Length: 306
Image 1: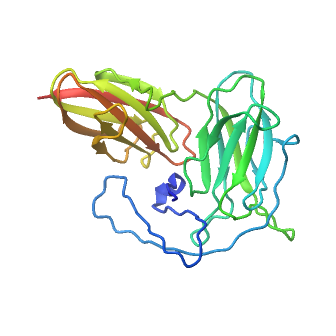
Image 2 (image 1 turned 120 degrees about the vertical axis):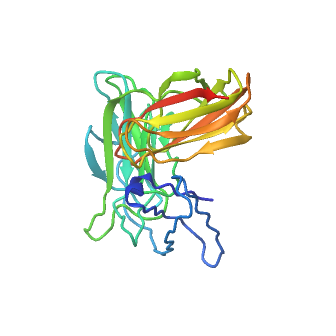
Image 3 (image 1 turned 90 degrees about the vertical axis):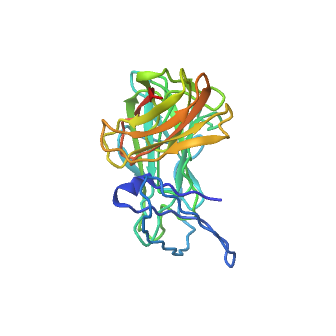
C-alpha cells in the first residue's frame, strides 16, 4: 500500500518514511536490497507520532510568486499551498524540489508532492512529482517549459504532518527551483526507445532521482551480451538498475541487474545469454541523491561472444 525509496539519505545507509496507519490493524513490511550486496544486516525500527493542524499559504487565483532559488513555505497537514514562477529567457526543463523540514532519525518528515500547471486556475496539469510515496524530498525534472512564461505550482502534504506549527513557532518546508536542464527523453512501455547494438550505445536524459525509462533492442547473433546503464552523476551511491524482458508488454522478466556505481565512468553492468534475431525490452530505473542535477544516461548493449 506504500513504498519507501528515500534516495535522499542513501549515502549514509538510512531510509525512513512516514505512513498513516489505522490503530489495531496488522501490517506487513517487505524490505528489498537493491545495491547488489548479498546477506546484508540491517536495523528496522517502527515509531509512532501524531500530526494534524498547521496553515497553508497561497490560493487558487492568488498564488505566491517564487523565484529561482531555495526558499521555504508553509502547508497544513493534508493541505495544499499554491505558488507561481516565471521561466527564463530560454525554453528548457526545470528541477523542482519540495523537502520536509521535520526530519530526523526519530521523527520521519512529511511526504510533500508537487503538481505543475500552465494556467492560473490550476486546472491544466502538465507535470507532477509523486513517484516516491513515503519520503521527505520530492525532486523531479519538468518537461520542457516555454520561455518567459508563468507556471503554477501546488505543493500537497500527504502524511498529516503539518509544515507550519501554530503558536508562533513555524516549521517550514524547503522549496527549490532551478533551470537550464535538458528535457527528459520521452519513453513508455507503449513507445520504448530503440538501442543500437555496439559500444557506441545510446545517450538519453532520464531524471536521476527516481525515474523509469523504457527501451528495446534486437539481437544480431546468439551469444553473451553485456548491458550497461551508466548514470553519469559521478556519485558513488547512484543506482541505475535494469530489468530485461522478452515481451513488448514488459511483463515477462528474464534478467535484472542491481549494482552501485563507482563514479561517472562506471555504471550498472551485467551479462546475459541471448538468442539471435530476437526483440528484447529493457526497463531502467534510476535512483540518486536528490541534490544530483546531472541526468545523462548512457546505455550500451553489445555482444561479447558466443
